[in-house]
Length: 434
Ligand code: C2O
Ligand code: CU
Image (cartoon, rainbow, N blue to C red; front, top):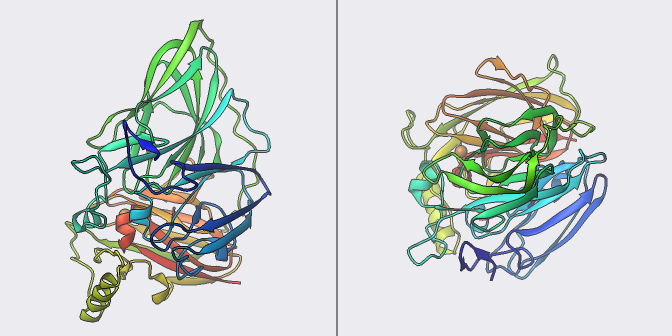
């Protein structure tokens, strides 16, 4: 059994590895993966952040049928962009991901900044019960309606007490992936190492940014960082968020003397996704609602819906009660196809999306099939408006404007990546007519 922490923990895993194997490719290469589902229940695989054809996106009932226990599905698609991506189930996600199903997919840059090492750190937290097993209280309504399922044990690549050994003068690239159900990591290196942010959600930042303040990484989000070891010692990478604040990992630098400060790493050149044309963009607003302490109360739950849910539960489905809405509608379970899309556009149309979060909670909103530019937060244009994201984090009260070119035909999901929020209704779709 793979190990999380000090004791062996029974998990669900891809290829019997925790996390799943790092899949590594060059830009333009094809991914060719045969999923053979040996779980006791149906699953799918979603390739988070990759601009791939709709039929390969892994959203059950929307882009493909669920892959039943014992069955297979073939995923095959080309990789248009370099960067740090990841894969995870998209069915019963709050449970399947929490049980360990997640892995990194790295597409190497054509001209990466030179580094001595290039590592993936997949971050997660685990809720363990009194016996040290994965707590079975998936979809607990309190979690669904509040901050989601937080776990008390934080791991890097499935292990606690991670150390990163370096020698004075070395430079390393870390690809951070937040695979936790609900935890927002707030990461900051201790003084003594120099650190830079060079990419987010797979796409390079326009210039390297000094990393000396908490870097917020919501569920689903990635950050590519570079660390320069300048002197010997032990330097924590602090995790400042939540009750489990402490060292995420420790950079252990050996050697002697003091290395000179190095120039900022050159962000890798890249071919950005098509730039949205704001003047002609279709404008749509997605307003979040619900959750505990909400002014507008719980989403409507008709007797018919309640009964249908009851029947699915009796048939073995694990499902959350509705707690969240987008534009007044709760998409619970994995049943997006039953609802009309929030909006439709024709292929190639620029879209300006306004996310409004009047709820009392944080929400990392994930857009499938496209990358978006974050234009403004609460009316203030982002300095970094040329950066691309596939997931954007909203704090309570936030109003965030994004834009993208809807160039990928199909029906796509937008949802909160706090998996319990998604299960409790915070998801919707939009249709790109090809
Ligand atoms: Cu990483 Cu729709 O998910
Ligand atoms: Cu949310």
